[in-house]
Image (tube, rainbow over all chains, first blue to last red; front, side):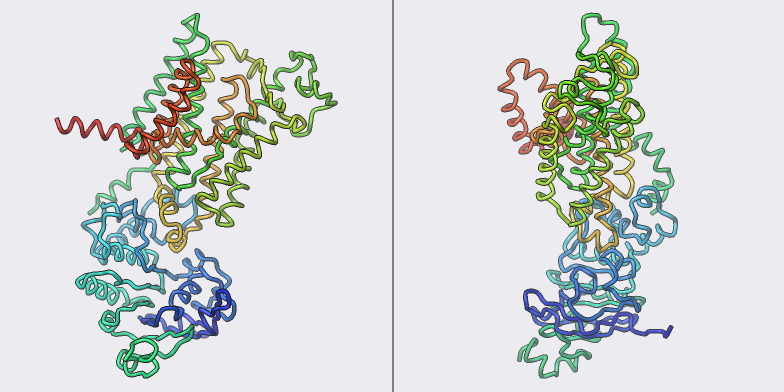
Length: 247
Length: 371
């Protein structure tokens, strides 16, 4: 088989809700180990795009390939097993268990009822847990019940859970919404740090944050890709200014 | 740093049997074990009393039923308002065996057919009564029938992603349907009289003191076993996964868990425990009738768990026993007052003790801590 440099290929995907085309034969490719930012006005299809990639929403037309697998053949949890992790806009962690337990349930092991009942943590799992809890800077709060974390810490915990899964592709939806400036800075450091060995798609409104990431940007508009490029070219693009950035 | 590792190195099983970190559970099981040795002996040597031990055994059956509900409601957030369905079915399976045990000692003296079938002019035993003359077969059915029904029912419901209050409503519909069906005379389970007039169990007189004592021991033993099974499940990773399903099912799905399968399995385990409780209940009260399937009975189970405190396992046991002891005494004093009283304590507990009676311990601790 030919080595495919694109980890994700979206080909002419259309999704409509009651006649409204949330995605309008959208196509895009994302290379392995690349961090990319997706921006666009409300209703551009950013959330729908994530929904179809993770299998939450079914596609009307078109195909999505992840590591050469046709995703329409997989259910939501099977797509996770293929290596796609999703970070929701609002922090979706399990509030009533500890930080440590949150990471434990995200551990990339067999996730059947029986294996969850019987298997114990192995030394290498434990090392991984400790490594990731350090990466997300929560080692001092590992025994805290997760609902007591601050907003920013919850977002990092969720990113940590995605790291536990060892996903090859992370979809991250508005990670810094509602964060303080220091938290935003910490988040961009965290993302840049973890982007070294995985592909990340960040959907974000905060232009300063995207600028600080210094990555390629895809602009969505009315369910299509308007343009893609680096920050400078996007800022100068007339269409983008018209539909999104404003004059 | 290596606290987790050393904790982890102790095997899960030893943790469970020593009930580490579960003080209340330890006390509860100790009390049950002591009662296993003490009560039947006391019972046999107090000549005038022939009733108390069955009453206590009945409480333990209700405790097991409440425990089974807490497993799904307290942890996975699945509120079943129809758990009486599985309790009742387990009871009927045992009842069918006890009916067959009567043999030709019935009113009509028919060796093959139970009285109600003779009364209905039935010629021969319906096919679904085959095999129930064997205790082993009946015991197997006690597990299989509620388990299978729960499996099919929950697979259909959870498979089409019916959750929350909608699920609760269809569980009510399930138990109501069963009640209507079992009320039918020609359904083959004795209609509204149900199954009763049992003579003996495993060849022993069912109303003798020794049998009652033995049934009490079985109930206590099953309750302990049920508690340990639930505790093993909850202490494993499954406990956290169930809480995850309760709080954020989508997150769990995006973590790669097939949450539907987890819910089906836990619901089925819970139904089997409820069925066993029903099977132990029937020989101790001497009757099973469609009243067990009445929706209000299933709602009462929820009240026991809520009063005891959901999501602790032992809370459900304490709740079921406390409410039923109160019920026994208050209905003797004044049957009308009981339901009002139950409503009242339910309201008070929900307002002042959000974790049910388990909050009492915390309140007491705080009170003495201040002194």
